[in-house]
Image (cartoon, rainbow, N blue to C red):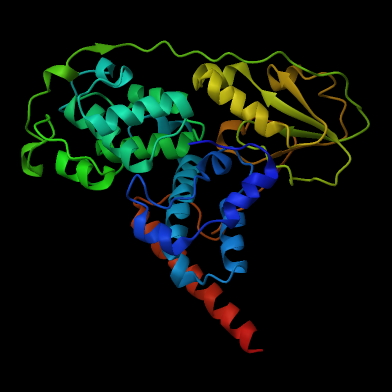
Length: 375
């Protein structure tokens, strides 16, 4: 899977979405999915922008509801992060007593679990920075619920390699699989994997009935574990000068929107703080992707360092960034992100309760749209 980085190609990818085909095939690895997640995660485009494009193409809410629901999961996790802040990186609900270690199964890092579809997906992750959502669930289930690993280290391993690495989605999803942010642990068996990946593998450690999986011993292939040493290689700063009389727009690895305050005459700096990447490291492939996306923003300069070390930081008449839980410490004015459901905020114990509120707003919006069409 190739992910173009120029803005026009990204917009074309939005325009090519078919929510009906997505609804019917999204769970299959060869299904008609959008491949928009890296651009949404990096703030190049917003969930609202995607939905607005669908509606302008003539798809109504009923045809688009499954696709909108998947986008709503992103907003749900982001709202959870806003509320929980750093507590999101601890167990959100409770810890299962069956955990045996806080390391990484070596068979996952080396793509040698023996589950062919999972191993192929891990190799693809290393090569492309992407993994289908269903395969992420399978991988997490093997790590947490079959090898009995605590969720945190495996989640950091996956985040490190993902072009669409979103700390809220990744962290909350891993906790959901592990049963720390849901009512039960998620298990997959070989039959389910075969169904959605088109494989026909048999006689693996997952070739069992679902009721057998929770009580099974850790398979030998998953017994060897390792600690991870994940580091980020950041580029050199490329600040050639700033104009202290103009405002400063601060971009981050989660806000690379070329349209944000596009017409404002301002200094534009992509801030890459080493402290952030020490806490949440990403691969060289991810850094390169971020830098390529940044090229869509005219006049953008790159600063590698902490925000208080930006030359002239105290001299700018105003400073702007976009609201984000990872960058609450940035000075100045924080613009709101573009939400599909700005009315639905705060923390909800389940996606179902969050989605019920979202559905209510969709019905209101649909009613207003119908009335406008009749007028």
